[in-house]
Image 1 (spheres, rainbow, N blue to C red):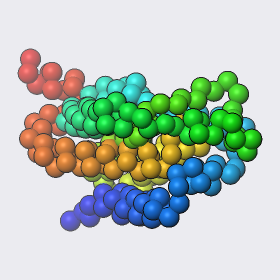
Image 2 (image 1 turned 180 degrees about the vertical axis):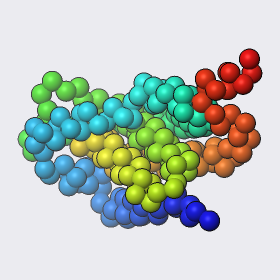
Image 3 (image 1 turned 120 degrees about the vertical axis):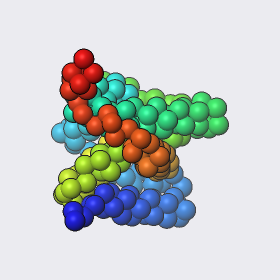
Length: 215
């Protein structure tokens, strides 16, 4: 029997959540943010500006459409996970935590604050991180669906973590925003997968093959 290795994704996620929550309880968010932004280079600036786009809505939509040609089931699970987690994130941003400010709001006059040229820093709607929500939803689904290799599952987690950290590195979010986004994304994708995965088994083939079977 092949061992299900998706649990490694959740082991590392729990470690990340525990560490983050512990730090948040011990220090204020600005102090934490400064501690996480001690080291910057032009190369890292370019790297994180690029990798952060993996959490963009358009990127997630592109992945969902591409998945149609791999497995309609996985694509549907991804679309539902992304939509569900996105709705939760948007409601929290724009209805519950409307006054939540981003790092730049507090640090723009701080002489020690590192700023990048030709980069747009946002100020409003900091909590939770939408990019982190999206990437953790996607990588959680991948970890559950493609769990034959421990290395691949850990790679999924590292990808999610890098995108989450990119939001902090780019000073678009605080650690608490990223923590909340990762919890929303992971939790939503997990429950969507567990609730409807088996119901979608008849759509396990690529879109082209499903079409040919019904012609």
